Every structure is written in C-alpha cells, then in structure tokens.
Image 1 (cartoon, rainbow, N blue to C red):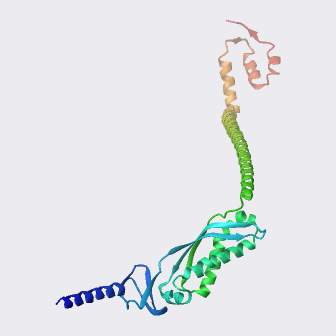
Image 2 (cartoon, one colour; image 1 turned 30 degrees about the vertical axis):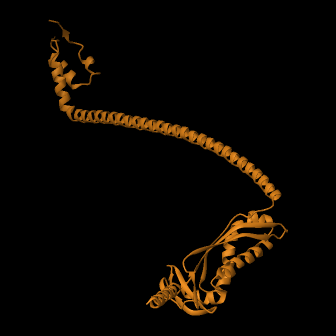
Length: 328
C-alpha cells in the first residue's frame, strides 16, 4: 500500500513536471518559434497557450510590433582623422508576422544584432569617413538620420524582406574637449554677430517705421490740403455759376424790358401813325382855333379866316394887314 502511494506520487510529480515544461505562453504582439535538437522547426505559433514536447523542444518569442533598438557609443572617424563618438542611435523598426520564420532561419532570433546594430556601425562610419568634422558635427548633422534610414532600408529590402525601418534618431556626437571649446567659442561669436545683426535690423525697422510714419503724416496733410483746395475750387466754381446765372437773369430782365419798351414804342408809333391822319389834324386845328381867347372884329375878318385856313403859316401874316383887333 505504501509502495502504491509512493508510485502514484512519483507519477503525479512526473506528470506535473512534464506539463510544466510542455505548456508555454506566447504574449500578444509576438510569434513563437521552436527548436528541436538545435534545429529550427517550421512550426510557429501566435499569442496564447501552447504545448510542446518537453526537454527536446524549446521555443523563442519574436516581437512583431513596433520596437526601438538602441545602438550605444558608436565610434566614428571623420575624413580629417578626428575620432568622435555617437552616444546613442535609436532605430525604430517593425517585423511582419509572415517574415518571422525566414528571418529567424537566416539571422537567428537575435536578427537585430546582425541586421540593425552591425549595419548602423557600418553605415555611420561610411558617412563619417566621407565628411570632415565641420560637416558631421555642424553642417550635415541634420542629414545623418535620414541618410542612415535610407541606407538601412535599402539593405534590409534585399537581405531581409519584411523588416521595415520606420525612423532613425541620432544624438549629437561627442568630440574632443579642445575642439568642443573652439566650437563653443565660435558659436558664442556667431551668437554675438546674430545679436548685432538683429539689433541692426531692429534699428533699421524702427527707422523704416518712422519714415513710413512721416510719409503717412505727410500724405495725410497733403490729402487734407488737397481736399480743402478742391473745396475752395468748388466754392469758386459755384460762385461763378451763381454770378453767371444772376448775370443771365439780369440780362434777360433788361432784354425783356427793352423788348417791351421797343414793342410799346413801336405800337405807339403805329398807333400815332394811324391816329394822326390829315382829317384828324384838321380836327385838332379847328379845336385849337375854337378854344382860343382872342376875338377879331372888322370888315376883312372873313378874308382873314380864309387866309388863315387856306394858306400856309408863312403866308398868313401877310394877308392880315387890314384887320383890327380888340380885346375884350
């Protein structure tokens, strides 16, 4: 009975040990690859729990989500022979699930050491050896990350399809202390120069502002003067038009009055011409004689009357020699 219990306990312990080494878990965002006797099996597994043959089979997990590989302290020699060091270079990459087996088969599960870390060292030294310190440290530093990304992706497309480089970030390299101090002094001088240039721009801008302000004020005054002058001209033109209208009105009034006088004189002349006929004049003569206050007496009175009314005024005095006059 004791032997049976011991055997059962051994069996249970063995089963638990087998289960412990055969059941394994693959995390989300990873793919499991399996080795048996050191050989890579074609079988892969996704996230979750899986069972494998214990003691003979082992597994590794390969990340298939976005990851960042850091390459630290990369030495780099410039074309001038100056040795500089890049403290940290970050390579953001992602491996597709379908390319896991082929890449692990060709470059092991630690494929990033061969395909990324070593390639970063190589490409960065290629860049440094083609440029001097001034270009690497100052002038073309902003191009290093983009050039490195293009070079890495070109090689990965040929060597490991499915591994994609998303971005590369390069930190400022470390340079010899004496050279660094020289650059700092140079940057300080550049800063002073920039400050002086900016100050000059400010002064020029202020002068330009004052000039524009003066121009605006002058244009404002000129506009006011122009408006006033135009107003005066319009007032003068208005006064001239009013004077012209008044003159025309006065001339029309005088012309109308003259025409009326002329018309009246013409009509009076015509009326007089029609009125003072020979018969009318004779009537007036008789009326004038009849209204006189003189009375003539004597024998020759009839003849005198005949002479007065029958002869011209010049002859009338010669025919009245024998008349007598008496006043009443």
